[in-house]
Length: 309
Image 1 (cartoon, one colour):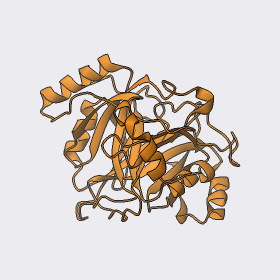
Image 2: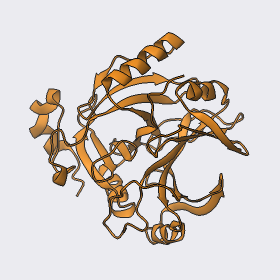
Image 3: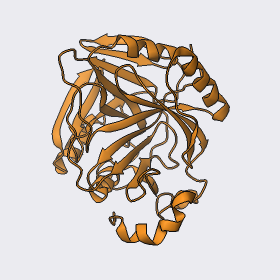
Image 4: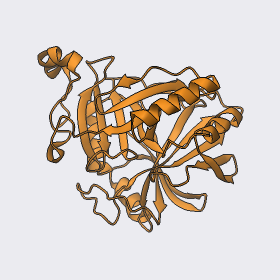
């Protein structure tokens, strides 16, 4: 069993409009945009990152906004809900705030004994805000969201699978422990993790496979301290029979990827070097930052990319 993984690093999804996506995460949810860059493989598409003040691993939601992309079809083999941690007692004020923005499918419920506010993002993305009482992560505040209610980072990601067996075994191998169950939902957590250390599995044996599009989670990334720990994880996964990519430099972290038995794409990303490697901390996310291989396209991209302010 691995002990290098400490929880989630980031979650990456697809969107249909960079402007709407940016407005939702900064103005509605009150997160900080910590990086404005482009998709390494499709540089005419943004890669936008939102999180806490520094883009701390375990807080960062990222998006590829493909203009006018069709919505995805919900189903199995995907992450259906991305959950953020909020302070105890703040669900009511969040429900009121989200109501003023007329978000889709706004509701409040309780799962695993935790009060949640559930809702959809601009492209039908599934989200939850989960009350937690022992999260000491410092929040980013602004846009009408103060420290008493601000998002602390990720709480969990929920995978929807036809059969949980093989994916549950994978999570155990990655250092997660089964800690609870609630109907069709099973909860796994990393002991002593980074606060974003919960994965839920919802088992839906009769549901069709998801179709990816705007609003779909593209992949979820798990955090390791550095490249040495990442190589240990990669070797262990290869020895277990998983097809794992070589290490890829993503400028702000190094990444490896592999497909899970349930169909969800997993990434293992390093906490180093961070989002301040090419931008002062006080101005994260303000300027368009390009990977070195795409810098020669700057004039064209700045003319082509949708203004998001």
